[in-house]
Length: 462
Image 1: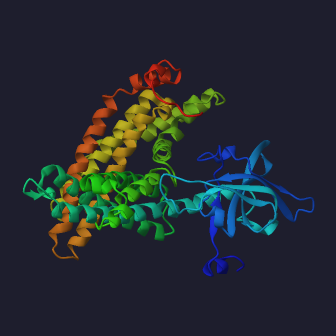
Image 2: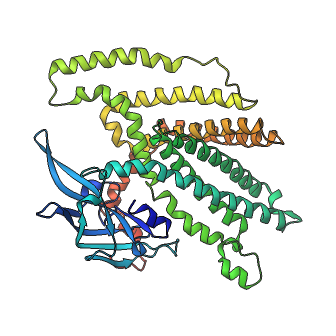
Image 3: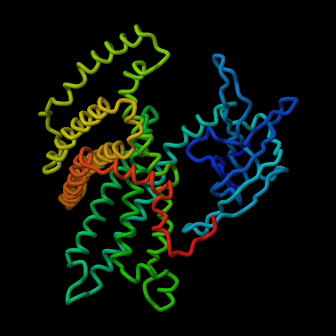
């Protein structure tokens, strides 16, 4: 009643979580909220970084440490979310950051010096700040797939127009195979992004669904692929893709600002969970099924009897679970040809993925968590299978609605063909890779053994 009408009237909001040394690990948060003696207020002290709209916000949601609580004899850190009005004494906009792109964004350093906030401004309750962040995280992540999909469609439009218009060696550049393959990649990938965005958004509307993994996969796939698409669009457009929109306009040419799109889109694989963090999150979710069964076996505190019981329980569980990964599926998908063959591939490959992950779990056990490159390959395989499933389902639904019917099917079919080759390569790299050599070399690089490679350059200040 107090704050939401203000947003309708034009008030600007921001979300203050990140700090200089706090990104994806909020346990390092230093901003504090200390209750006053009368218990009616909290005094917030600290500094926040990269808060979108923070520099011009009227109202902020600020994450801060509140006094810890003792749970089961142990001290438990509490992070709480506060509604803070920026006209409160002690609040200061200290700096406006500038970035590679997004030049109009108001984003910077915010300082809090004894900012007095009423106790009733805590959202959900004391210690519930991270819960609030996780509640809003999924839908926040789903804004990225939709946004980058729109940008990718625009890149496809610009590329198609230019590829048809620009002539080289007597024909349009779109008729040359090198450019033609870029156009088909853009079109099929945009179609898959469309399918993923619709599907995950539909899931988000169903409040009974847990969409943590689907939201993460959607964000990961769409932002990574959109970056490739805008890069390809710049390449298709050539020098005009590298030239700024105002410069093109100044000399009387169509001012498609692809270079701006390239700069602006680079951040999409970083914000709302970087690609690396999303890989890690998805890997932990995938391993959780196995780790819950065997973690007692490696616990130093667990008794011998507890370990024996855990081993027996895990053995029985895998006795029924593992054989299912070899049973072929004979049921039809019900989708239009040739999509049904891709659905069979998805089912068969999902089983293979489960087996491969289990085998590596058996080899590395708890150490598998640290094999990030290996896990990333498994996650990418699962991500591509998810994208294929969405594309096939979406194409089949469009086939039964739109004319001409074959267009959507052709897009999904080619996307699946292209993606199958990526999956085959990832499976190959599970066993045939240079991860160990690469990691060994990187340790020597960090130690300075290869600093001679950095000679003959003008070095900036540290």
